[in-house]
Amino acid sequence: MGIISRLFYFFAPYTDAHERSVGLFFKSLTEHSDASRTRKRLGELLQRDVALINLWTEYRYKGYKYLRKAERRKLYANLEIIAQDFEFFRSENSRHFDSIVAHVERLAPHANVDAERVVLIHALMDYFSPVHGRYEYRESSSFGRLLRDPGREKLVGDCNQIVTLYLYLYSRYFSVNDLKVRLLPEHVALHYGGIDIEATNGTFANYTGQEGAVLMPIEEIVSVNLLDTTDSYLATHEVNPEDFLQASRFAYILSHERSIVTHNLEAAYTMLVNSLMQRNNYTQALKFATYSRDMTLIGMVGHNGAVHAIQQHHFAAARKFAQHAPKRTELLRDSWHAEGAYLYDAHKYQAAIKAFEHVGDQSLVRRCYEALFFDEQQKLGKDMTTETIKQYASTIKRMQHYAKKSGNKSLVDHANSLSKHI
Image (cartoon, helix red, strand yellow):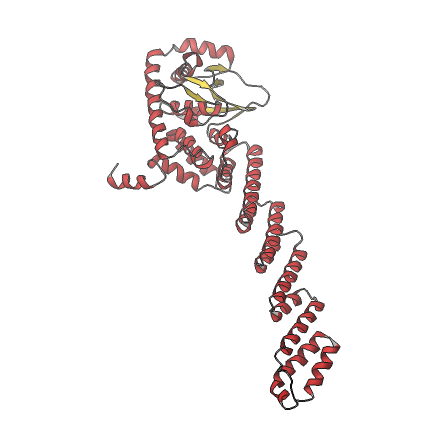
């Protein structure tokens, strides 16, 4: 890495070019991205950076703030140590193909496996088998807890985390597209050539026909990891709603399991919009509600935004929000009434008249003209005579005009009595 690159990555949020390419990939995604092109690019990244993808998305989109750049560098170094340790183990402990195939065929008679690949998979299962003490299954764990130096610490992770680590090590030898993801209720396993691989205990299995068991393309592991928000860390740490929405968007475009990710995306939009409304950020809330295309959510933001804007005396903004509310007409009328009252109290009667005229409230318009009449009357001098009254001719004419507009007969009579002397 040249000096310019080192300087760039010193200030950038990424550790290196690989992490940057993953970061930019996710940053460019929305739920409207082209699915086929996106999955093709994801496949390329999976082959090269499946572990990096999981670590970056945990840091950026799932609230794992401990995964700062220095920590991620350390974990990537540990990942390389694991890979080297596994290679040494594999070279020393590989079992013969025939014995593995015999076991596979007993579990899944229709399995069709390649010698080199199934031997590698068996080596992975053996390496991570709990009986050897390198790996410990722990439900709802961060990926970072799995990326430790196996010579010093036990590797700890849940089912999707250990599946991801299997995939990373497998990708160093063969294409990850050889494998599939086996989804089960509240569980994830791998699948190769007709046989399931239970990564948590290092055994072959056959989940075919089991209730809820579904086979998915290998890239589904990314969506599984993105949607895995059950970690105890997340129960005690706030996840930024904008980040949660992004993770849900990614899962939506990347996943083949649309029923799950659609519900998750809807929940993410609702969570984010509610969070923004709690902070009175109705402009952003309306933007994201509009993105969601959820008319109920849009209407709720429109209504609440209009009410809040009226309370803050932001009447033009209130009317913009009201356009999106179910009770649009009522809110628009309320905003004009509130604006008129606010202006009336501020003695801005002409502007108040315009506001009240928008809703055709003539009684309040007349009250404004009465107020204008009295404002003019205050300009008249004290102890006026028939001579001095002529100095206020323009004021008296305005009083006559306002009195007539007010419809108040006593004010009209008073103004007329004064005009006789000018």
